[in-house]
Each structure stands twice: as structure tokens, then as C-alpha cells.
Length: 140
Image 1 (spheres, one colour):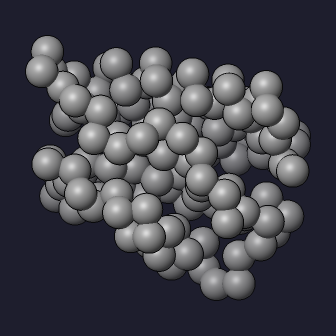
Image 2 (cartoon, rainbow, N blue to C red; image 1 turned 30 degrees about the vertical axis):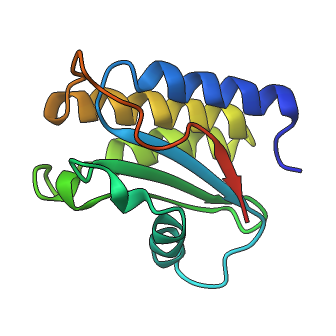
């Protein structure tokens, strides 16, 4: 497995902490290989996980195919309608720096944290905010 149980707990803590700053919903999906463009695979997984079910359409999926060293960050329609086209570039760059050093957990946590910071500008956390998607790591 690419990340052990302790690393998984730390990533889940990063998600929980991040979601206290934004109404956006963040999830991570890990699998070994990706036989297509990572963005296309991330879109498939996004829909398999039913991440489009959030009220504000503000779900974010961080997808990583660790053996192939491919990843993608995608947001739902509500996010895409509000943010500039290069919105995820800085998140991607920070994650890539860590991944190149084989720092998988650190890259995922850095990406989650930065994604939430950026999302908070468009989707701030609200007092009545509900966690619409489970905070879990999915595996393929």
C-alpha cells in the first residue's frame, strides 16, 4: 500500500481541518495505475463517489495513481463556474514538489490545505455547514 494506516489518519485529519475553513468538500482517491489521462480518470471516480451530490456543487477530488506517478485535482461545476481557469495550478505545483521527493502524505496534506484555503475565498465555511460527503480516502 502506498500509505500506511498512520499516514491515512494524518491525511484524514488534514481533510477535517481543511473543511473547517470552507464549505467545499474534499476527498482523496488513491490507486496504483491509471490507464488514461488522470483528469479523465478523476472525473470517472468523482461520479462513482457521487461527489456531485453537494448542494453548492463544490466537491473537490484529489486523484493519485501512485505507481504511474500521475495525479489530478478536479472541482465540481459550482467551483468551476466561479474560479479562474488556472485555479488549481498552485495546488498542483505544491503537490508535485512533494511527490517528486516521494513525500506522498506530505504532498496530499499540502494539496488539501492549499485547496481549502483557495476554496474558502469562494465557498467560506458557514455556521450551519454540514459535512455532505464522508471524510475518507477511497481506493481503486
